[in-house]
Image 1 (cartoon, rainbow, N blue to C red):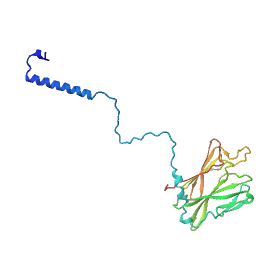
Image 2: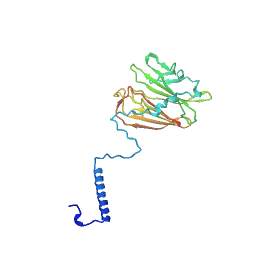
Image 3: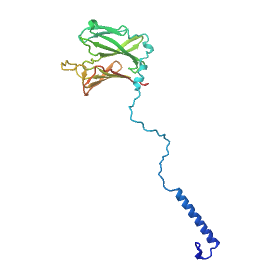
Image 4: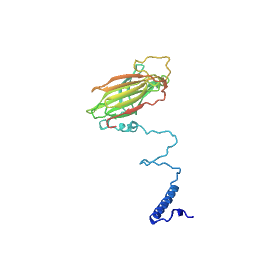
Length: 261
């Protein structure tokens, strides 16, 4: 017996309805077959380009700006073109034993008698330190004392300004040595301001300490000076406690900042 034969004759309208229902059922079955659930990979639309995460590695930071730009502070300005600081007399200097010497460098060096030490030109920088839009000369010397062993060196700084073809010294400073306290940690320059960082407690006059271990210091001192129109006057001095460290081979940091940096 054929399906639906028990229902009597089917008119054309019912036949069309049945045919449409059959076609719709077949289409529905096909759609279900095609759209059956599958394992899906989720994708997110983004304008960023995905970069695989690398394995752990050591980050090499770029060289600090002040280090990269330090070379430009060695360019000699016009007002100092005729001044040769490698062959220059810095005047009388008093040694730790009270003796005075003529600090007259030749080829950047002055050797003291009886192998008791030497002075040497370390570097010369040019930067506006007084706010007059003209560079001053910042001269850096080292002073090694040997009696008989050498003390690792102290550092001397001189700042010169030029007026009418003549040099005028507006500041000078000598640090302690690396062997004892108050050796140079860093020297920071900016317009009208100097910050000296020294190893050890330099807030009080130096005292002889027989128990002091050579080249081993604890803490650091920060001295801030500002130009007042005539000289660099001390504005503050602070001591910071830090663990002991050996500074025998330490190399001081020089930082120079200017409005154009």
